[in-house]
Length: 233
Image 1 (tube, rainbow, N blue to C red):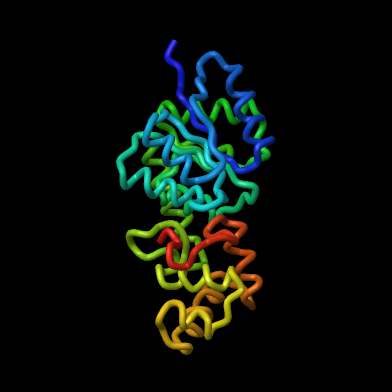
Image 2 (tube, rainbow, N blue to C red):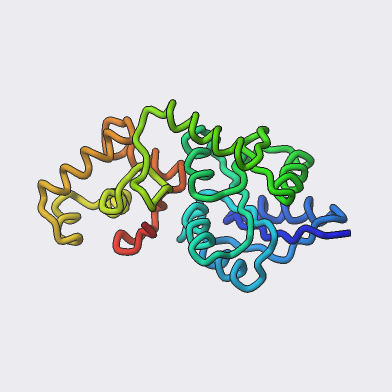
């Protein structure tokens, strides 16, 4: 029997071990490793190239979608299934755009998760409870993009609706920096910072900086320990 090799990545030890224990009981699964952050996940992906990796979206350091970007850039053959505690359509769009083979909520039943893993192993794409072929996934993505009210990333960075500079500014905002401090750190004018912040609020559809931070944190685009000079964009 061919066994599907798996890597489990989540920063919550109890949840991660629960997934490992559940999947390890299946005779066609072989859990070859686990990690608590994006950097360790990437190290294991490079070394072992498991068939499927199950990643939390919001990881410390590199988030799940940033890990996907490196997997794609380095042509690592592993297929990625993203799990999230915040199940929303926009995050699903970004996951599939980034190159994930699947995206589903963490409250998924163990048996359903096992079935989705097997579907992905066969080359299918999954979003929640929906299973797609490659062509069906492309059509789903096109339909979602047409219906989306907010703009999405610039070509080459399909992981969030912001430009690279806006992501740098957002990382500073997450750290509680003032516009003056951001301008000094990034070497741009105070007015340019204000323009970027205004653009971020508009793209997120929120009213203030606090709401923007919450919006980005929930979707795993930044975390509280992000370095704005190394934002992964």
